[in-house]
Amino acid sequence: MTDSPTYGFDTLQIHAGARPDPATGARQTPIYQTTAYVFRDADHAAALFNLQEVGYIYSRLTNPTVAVLQERVATLEGGVGAVCCSSGHAAQIMALFPLMQPGRNIVASTRLYGGTVTQFSQTIKRFGWSATFVDFDDLDAVKAAINDDTRAVFCESIANPGGYITDLDAISAITDAAGIPLIVDNTSATPYLCRPIEHGATLVVHSTTKYLTGNGTVTGGCIVDSGKFDWSASDKFPSLSTPEPAYHGLKFHETFGPLAFTFHSIAIGLRDLGMTMNPQAAHYTLMGIETLSLRMQRHVENAEKVAVWLENDPRVDYVTYAGLKSSPYFDRVKTICPKGAGGLFTFAVKGGYDACVKLVNALEIFSHVANLGDTRSLVIHSASTTHRQLNAEQQEAAGAGPGVVRISIGIEDPADLIADLDQALSKATA
Ligand SMILES: *Cc1c(COP(=O)(O)O)cnc(C)c1O
Image (tube, rainbow, N blue to C red; front, side, top):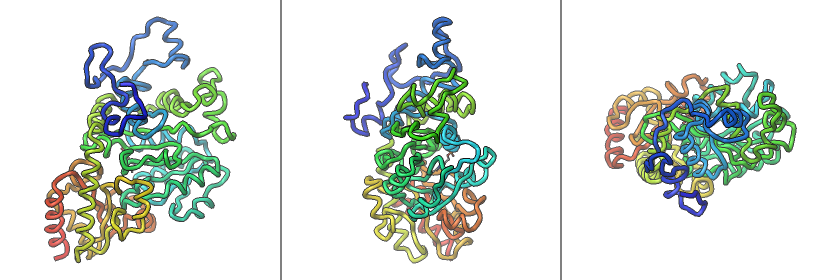
């Protein structure tokens, strides 16, 4: 299939990037379980190593199965290119790597996946990078946090764990004015519910571990490039705009234009950091993406039913689902994720920490796991698990205080999910 922007999402999620296997005609994308590829001759090998010709050298850099997934995610997000890697956290480091240098910083939302808060507040310091966390609903605070050393602004479209929605249009207006890229983690929304590039994102990152694969089988990550950022407009991004010594002085932006970031991520990022996705993982994720829209519709339908039921239950203090009319984020659903607010949210159980722990133990259909975006419904008490490394203030700012549980609503029968929550709430608050 020739990828045409006129095809609808449901068609592209099945066909984008894939074509019958040129060797065998296999209709499903084969798992190219190989580390290396035979060069036609010495000149061909030299041209590939010089980036003068695009092709396969070694699977740390590129692999045909992974390449199909890259093209598919890029197409669904409306980007020009994508690079897959071994996990969502790898994708975040790979996204920052071409932009950063020692002494540079990022401005990040306080409402992020717990592991991301830890990665940004602790681990990146080892590279000489730092992060300033601010409330992204406070646009003046975002503006004020950006300084001459800021090289990216980072947020989630639908933020884990609370399902809060970020006003991407307002944030991208700020990053555009400052001449720095906006990176949006679109894991919880998926491109079916939200397309951050249409709201001004420069790069979109994913944990493909979650909804894109959809069934809790493999970890993976992806970075999609909008192709829209002018890396040469200032001297802030020398990795992309100035001569690269490892490639005989090649300038990525000048040579590859809108694909500069993607080529850099493969030729330098994967080459030297080695956070590569393996072809088996790409296969599982490709299988998952084929049904993405169908699953997301059901996740949203079920989440709405469960959230309304919980909100009306006297044993529950409050529910954070943005799809509820009572949510301060309700109006943003229409502009940022018009097909629904996703399947992830938190709720507060009367009785606080102890009641939350009892609830998690009493649930039967909901599995107690550190994952989200599975076909099965999942539950976790964030404060004692995913957000455990955070201090109390960070937990509250992230929406992961001790009195709330996070649920990821699956695609089971919604009546069964409600019945399970009903019996568990009785035990938790008895
Ligand atoms: C899970 C998750 C990540 C990290 O992804 P891994 O695949 O677990 O490394 C990042 N962001 C969000 C929103 C996530 O849910």
